[in-house]
Amino acid sequence: MAMLEIKGLEKRFGDKQVLKGVDLTVPEKSIFGFIGKNGAGKTTTMKLILGLLKADKGEITVNGMKVTYGQTDTNRMIGYLPDVPEFYQFMTPREYLAFCGEISGMPGSEIKQRSEELLEAVGLGSEKHRIKGFSRGMRQRLGIAQALLGRPKLLICDEPTSALDPVGRKDILDILVRASKETTIIFSTHILSDVERICTDVAFLRNGTISLEGKLADIKRSYRSDEFCIETDSQASAEALKNAFPMLKDNENGILVFRDKDLSPFEVMSFIARSKLPVVRFERVEPTLESLFVEVVEP
Amino acid sequence: MRQLKAFVKKEFLDQYRSGKLFILGAIFLFFGILSPATAKLIPKMLEMVADHDTGFTIDTTREVTAIDSFDQFFKNMSMALIVFVIMQAGIFSKEYSSGTLMLSLTKGMSRGRVIAAKTITLFLTWTACYALCFGVCYGYTAYFWDVSAAKDVFLAALIYWLYGMSYLAMLVFFSTLVKSNTGVIGCIAAVYLVQTIILSLIPKVKEVIPTYLSGIGNLTHGKDVAFAVPLTVTLILSAAMIVSSVPIFNKKQI
Image (tube, rainbow over all chains, first blue to last red; front, side):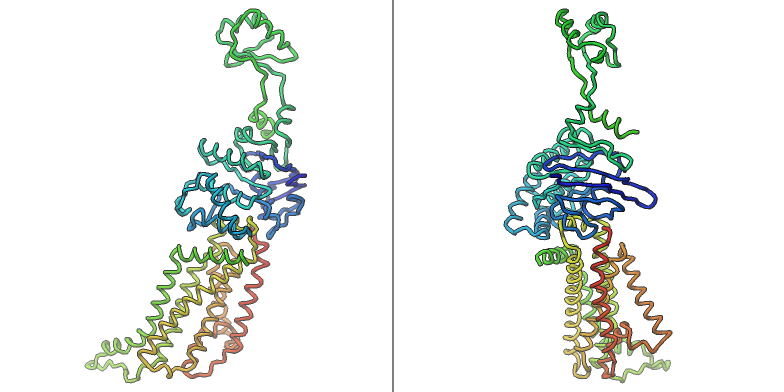
């Protein structure tokens, strides 16, 4: 069953139509990458899911339950990490998590145990100071901890890694992967390497609609090209190959490329084997998310 | 109930750690001491100012009584109430602008309980500050003068306390309508101003509108103050404002 379903979602701010009919299905237990340029409407979509904004049109259901604007009960199933999480600065992380646990109706003993477990997991286990002095990265970690506190069915993260350094990013992604064993995660981002690292499903948001959606592996497969590339260790080998196969093209870095339909890769391989040419690399060119992004998101 | 308790606890932790509780306590304590002190010292100061050679005299024969001290109390209280409202005006707007409320709401915190918790916090804080101020004032007054000279002191104090509560109800109500704390203060000031204008245009309504209660100190003079109608109006309006702020808040974009 789908954990989150969005149908025909529209939202306008003044004369700017941000969402023009977004349809989206997030399968259970997936890590869903929600990709789009800055200002594409990712945060707006997320706020609509949380009932923080009023949709002009369309319907959102979380685990089969309809989201309503304002006071909405679906939020009990959702953990939310905003792009810039803001906490009560006068509290310590433990106090804050205890507060979150109490307002979400967790039993006292569980709050304590879960808080310790989560603070340990996000690396704030020994932090005794008030949130006031926390760095951006620490806030993001605490943000994940509070979002996961109530063991939500759906975890919504708004650009969780955008403001972090590489180490901080890796940590957050690792935490998300671990969390994905228990919960469905949807996270928005424009950092494609993060998506490639952990996502199972992706959707591209462009011009207020979803321009591409599906399993990451399927999408990559369907966009797979028939292009191959060969990298040799010397100019001489490259020349030898080019002489044997005039179809080979030099690309800018001295790497030879060809297409499946022009030339059989096996023929090239056997030539390399016969002539004992030293090659560094012989591979089928995988579409990167980068190239997909450019293709799908850029007009 | 647990949600409410947790939120009230959080509010008080904020009041305490931000130093608001301490500052308000100090201010109300100061006003509590100030009222009897003024009553005690002013005649003496005036006597010093008076210069018999030039014929500039001030009649200091009238004896100061407990009534003067309580008069000062009710006068100072309006000032203390303004300070209280200004200091607490950000109780909602601070959460709007920082975005802290968003996380609580997305955790399933009921919006109605947010209103309830903040209202309770304001009422309790006001009650504590007021009780401190009145207690100190009463104690000193009883020490210096015979309090039996003043009539209905406790009744007057009780009514002023309720009058103060009506400003807190306004604070909650306007906080659900506007986003900034200056907006809230502006709205409350406007309400006060409108009442004053109405009062000057149609003096007949004076015994109906809430601001009439600010003169409740006259009760201690033994004067007959018809407070029943304005008090009822004030209480009904306050309750209406608190109750109607819930549906407004439920639809508010946070």
